[in-house]
Image (cartoon, rainbow, N blue to C red):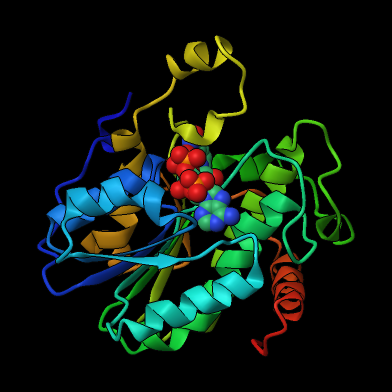
Length: 287
Ligand SMILES: NC(=O)c1ccc[n+]([C@@H]2O[C@H](COP(=O)([O-])OP(=O)(O)OC[C@H]3O[C@@H](n4cnc5c(N)ncnc54)[C@H](OP(=O)(O)O)[C@@H]3O)[C@@H](O)[C@H]2O)c1
C-alpha cells in the first residue's frame, strides 16, 4: 500500500468552515473528524441526526453543526441548503462525499437512484451554496468520485430518468461517478478566475459501509483486500487542504496525486450535455 494514502499532516484550519455530505460513517466520517481535529468548524449534512450523533459527540458541539439533507430528494436538498446558509458561516470547503452503490431504485423525483444521489443532489447543492462559497476566502469544492468512472459507458439520458435497469446496479454506479468527474471539469471552466478551485478524486477501494449489500461471509473476505477509512480519507483531505491542490483546479486525484480521467470524462461535449440536463432536471438557471 502506498504511503501516499496515509493521513496527511493538515494545516491549521482554525476559522475555516467545511460542509460535508454523508459524514455519519465511512470515508466522510473519518474526513470530518480529521478536519475538526485540525480546527475546522464542520457542517455535517446527512439523512439522520441520530446516526450522525456519535460523530457530533466526537467532534464536540462547539465545532459540529448538523443539517438534515436527503440527496434522494431535490426538495430536501433545497431545504438542506437553506439550513446550511442559515448557519451564517462562510463555506471554505464543500465536500460532496455521500454516495451509495449496489442499491436499485429511483429518487423521490424519479431519477435513477445512484445518479440522483451521487450526482444530481450534489449538483443542486453546489449550485445553491455557490454564492457563499465564492464569497469565502480561498474556497474549494471536492467531489468524491471513483475510479469506477473509467468503467462507465456513455450515459443514456433516458435511463437516468428511470429505475435502475441492471440487477447489480454497478453500471449505474459507474455512470454516477462519471457524472461526478464530468461535473468537476465543467465546474472548473466556470470557476476559472474566481479564486475557487474544484477537484474530483478516487479514495481507493475502502472497507466502508458502502459494501453493505455484499452478502456475508463474502463481505468480510473482500474487505481483507481493502484499505481502511483512514487511508481512504487521505486523498479527500489532500484535495481539501493541501497547498498543492489549492494552487490548481479541475483535476482528478488518486493517492494524493493527479491522475488521468477516462476518455468519456474528458469529452467536453458530454461534460456540457450532462451540465445542461442536470440544470434542467433541477429546474435551475445555471448556464
Ligand atoms: N468505499 C469505496 O471503496 C469507495 C470507492 C470509490 C469511491 N467511493 C465513494 O466514496 C464516497 C463515500 O463512500 P463510503 O465508502 O464512505 O460509503 P459509506 O460508508 O456507505 O458512506 C456513505 C455515506 O453517504 C450517505 N448517503 C447515502 N445515501 C444518501 C442520501 N440519499 N442522502 C444523504 N446521504 C446519503 C450515507 O448516509 P446513511 O448512513 O444515511 O446511508 C453515508 O453517510 C461515496 O461517494 C462513494 O461513491 C467509495
